[in-house]
Amino acid sequence: MPGTDAAGPGTTTHPAAAWLDGALRVPRHVPLVAQVRSGMVESVHYGSYIAVDADGGTLRSAGDPGALYYPRSSLKPLQAVSMLRAGLDLPAPLLALAAASHSGAAVHVDGAQEILARHGLDASAMANQPDLPYGTAEREAWLRAGGVPTVLAQNCSGKHAAMLATCALNGWPLAGYLEPHHPLQRLVHDVVEELAGERLTHASTDGCGTPVYAVTLAGMARAYAAIAGAAPGSAEARVAAAMASFPENVAGEGRDVTALMRAVPGLLAKDGFEGIQAVGLPDGRALVVKIADGGDRARMPITLELLRRLGVDAAALAGIATAPVLGGGHPVGALVVLPHTNGPTAHLGEEHHD
Image (cartoon, rainbow, N blue to C red; front, side, top):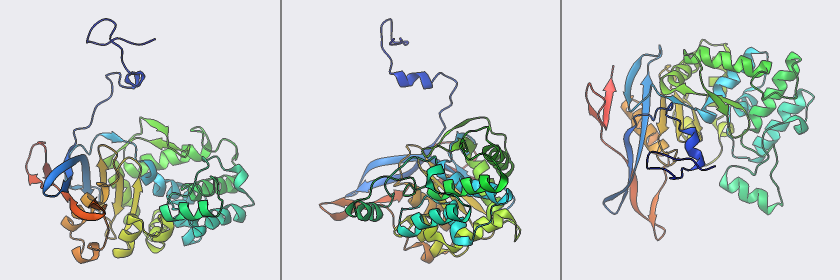
């Protein structure tokens, strides 16, 4: 039945209001990026971020990096670390695919199939949702060829193939491999806690069906710092090297995270739905961004600006494309990173340094 609220008896509330039961805290985001059209601010994207050093200490931050967020697909490198620790052994191109949200090109679909075939498996065991390729060009080509949604074309198929391979290697059940109580997912849970340096208290289900855990931006930054700065030969270092060496398998041609990794050798980058971007630098520093409204277009402009502030070569970053602002098919504006001022208190637009 419809509910009532403080507006008075009989006032109806949307069913979604049941999710906002007063126990949830809305993060204190700050304005980060504006869309400027013909000299006027048209829209503003709020968000939060944190950059940490190789030991996880805060270098700079803004907004609410201590709030909990679902990292979505930026969790994949941590999941890949978990699988390597459980004995999975893949060549670097396929390991990069295990940490990917790929575009669905032939190399991605074939790679997922190869992961399965190496372990005596096929796509029938995969529990991700069938989908068309994620990349625009790849999707159009797939449809022109008469393709339909499949589990292998879905952007998380490399991860799911690797999860099934890990289960086969360990004698764990293939059925139910996405259930939170499954040995694989219990391992992932523990590794995420370890790398993030914080206890996991909230969980949900990602779009592909995999468990996803709520982590602070600070925790995710510590995790990426641990992966980026890991000792050679460790599972973390192997994941970082695979992603940095095969960025086209982590995303795809024309994708900004692939372009970013190509522009800065040794850098690893992973995006996630709802405006998440995580970056690990070759020296072990890390950066994580969350765009409050979940919009994707603001994710890369603020990331690039923060990388410049962290000393990454601006010339190397100059060629990374961001979303255009068009009118009649011609540029009429741009996405602009809003200025931040230094200060000891958490006012809007302020950035904090430690």
